[in-house]
Image 1 (cartoon, rainbow, N blue to C red):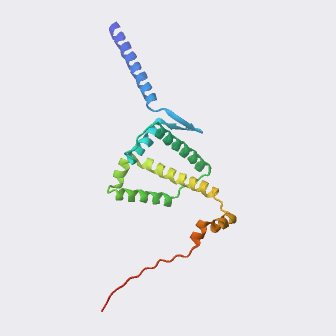
Image 2: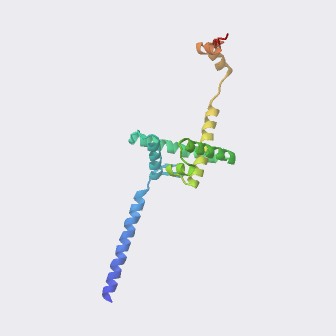
Image 3: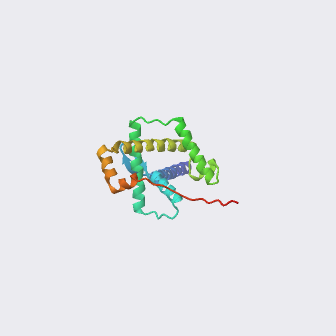
Amino acid sequence: MHRIQIFLQLLLITAALCLINNAQAFEALDSTVAVVEDDVILSSELNQRIEHLSRKQPNIVINDSIKKEVLDQLITEKLQLRIAQRLNLKVSQEDFQTRIDEIKARAQSESIGFNEYLIREHLTDSKLRQSIIESIALQRVQEGNVNNRIQVTEREIDEYLSSAAGQDWLKVRFRLSHILLPFD
């Protein structure tokens, strides 16, 4: 009886140590790389984006500067998604379907099926949906910011038209060609 108790205690201690070891391995698996407002960027997100970049550009050498650029891009996207959220930007079903059709056309141009394309890109239906919504929101935020910053005044137009490039643009141009069709 005493041996069984000792054996059970050893078994319990071994199981506890295994659980602690697994928990530590799990924590080390995914760590926080950056904090953007109240959102985080995990190392798995960064690695996934770097892997995607490697698939798109097979000759690229992944070094610390590339990793930093990818991280900067992720941070910028998170901030822009925050802006889209604050502006309450919504994606219509028509915009969503247009983007799906573009992806299907891209898959078809690569001579693979839509589902094969999703598998190759490591996308599930829910990830694809989220990715499309985020990309449309990012596009709208970026277009809005660019369009709001561009202001062309009448004076700038007049200055351009009086410059050499503007004068060249105003020149009348003709394209002439001669086609001779001999006949009897």
